[in-house]
Length: 92
Image (cartoon, rainbow, N blue to C red):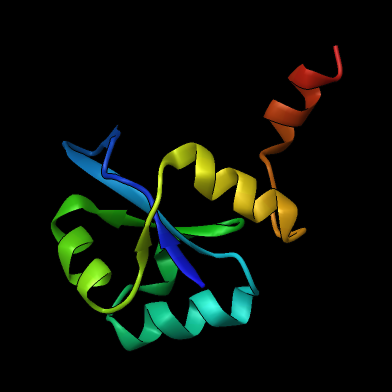
């Protein structure tokens, strides 16, 4: 299933959502390509997508979830790839 969280991350004068799959990377890559999301938006385990794309992606079938639900789904699917720095801090 394709998941999207609300646009809430500020960056480059915009708000951003995260688009991910709870099934496979192939699924989210195919969905992203089919909906014009550039490959440069890929960040380890999700795509960063601008707020102005949110409604269209939901209309195309992405399931709106909270940011926490998205991370939990990635972890449960074994697809979560946290940043190394975050992992290092949690080991202290």
